[in-house]
Length: 103
Image (cartoon, rainbow, N blue to C red):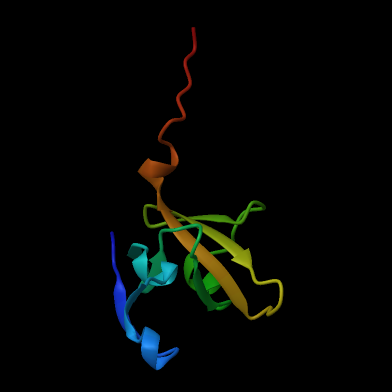
C-alpha cells in the first residue's frame, strides 16, 4: 500500500514549493482484532494502552498472543509502563516458508 502526503515547504521564500512527505505509520496496513485496529508492520507497531491485554489475553514468554486468526506480537514500552507496542500477523503468513519433511 503506497501513500504520499503532500505539503508545502515554507523554509525560505526562495525554496517554497511542493515536497513529498511520507510517514511510515500512515503507510502500513491495519487489521481489526476484537474491535481494535492494529498495525501489520513490525517496523511501525501500534502504540496502545496496556489495558488492551485484557481484550487479547496474556502473551507467552516471547510476547506472542494467538487471537482471532492472528498472531499479536506485543512488547512493553521501556519508558512508559502504561503503553504497549503491538503488531498483528495472520497465522497463515506466520508459517510460510517453514516446512518440515520427515523421511
